[in-house]
Image (cartoon, rainbow, N blue to C red; front, top):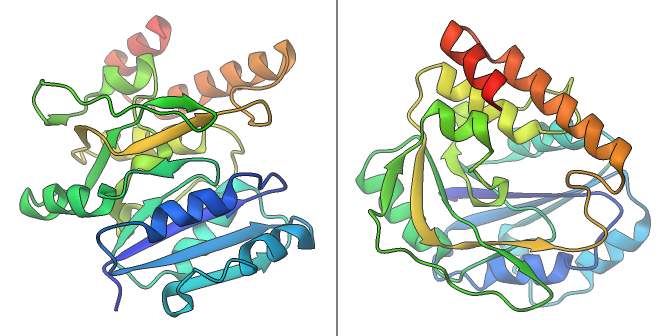
Length: 241
């Protein structure tokens, strides 16, 4: 039985997919399963995945599904997972080789339910390890999430029972989960070590490719924050945002 289930969903764009997967198999900790969901894309992605002979098929699951959209594809993968700990990795991002080993050490030794890592942005194939001398483990509070999303989706490690995405929304799917969990009084923690690397490239959708897309993304982010507001203090944070 794997201790960690790693989930990658992919739709259309797959230029960095094999590099992403290889960063998983480069991990120093190997008691995991990797679940890839091809969310309604063409057969080219299937060929791109299966052509790599370096993947260990004993802990590799691959699913071709009709177009579900991001939240539903993530929930599908979570249902297929065997481990009680879930990690998410976007198909264009990378992990440090010791990401799982280090993160799991803090996760288990501090008895955590949710832990994300420092996640510097990089372009091309050049990234830097930007570790800080500040305290390693920090509890995340609501202003950290209302002002901006400080939790990189590709960096999270959390217990499976908390891993559920809202299938009625199609952007900002991650911040919706974080706000819901923190509103439920779940403690979310940040590990101040650069263990995840977020790739910036021309084909990604964040927050959109034109002014209209960016405006829609911003409006949707406001709606999600309002929907997860329960007290006057929460609404004040939305206004500040």
